[in-house]
Image (cartoon, rainbow, N blue to C red; front, top):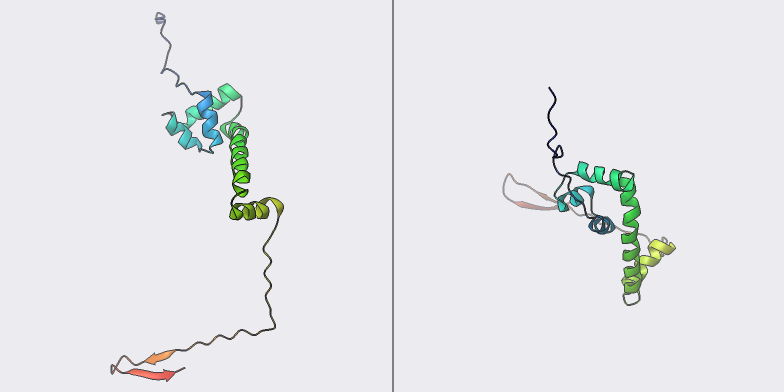
Length: 131
């Protein structure tokens, strides 16, 4: 026996995911778990949203949208490097392949002195013998 149509949709109402908020969360490099927590849904819902709205998996969408966050961070680092020598050095090493060169003079010998004291615990006396 078939049911009469009631005009009501089957299942639970779809969780609405704001695309601007989703984009900003990806730019901040939030994980899928964190994004799902923000929208109070499951990670599977995030996967379904990406497939429905963007036509690809979360990973593909995330790679595209997170690039904007990297550009913003890089822009901020370059501005900071104008006033902060440490940031300028960091960027030089990471982006320009610069390194710190430290010369070590190997002609000078290195002496290591190790001294051990023997302690006799049976009679309570500390020995002064050095090995």
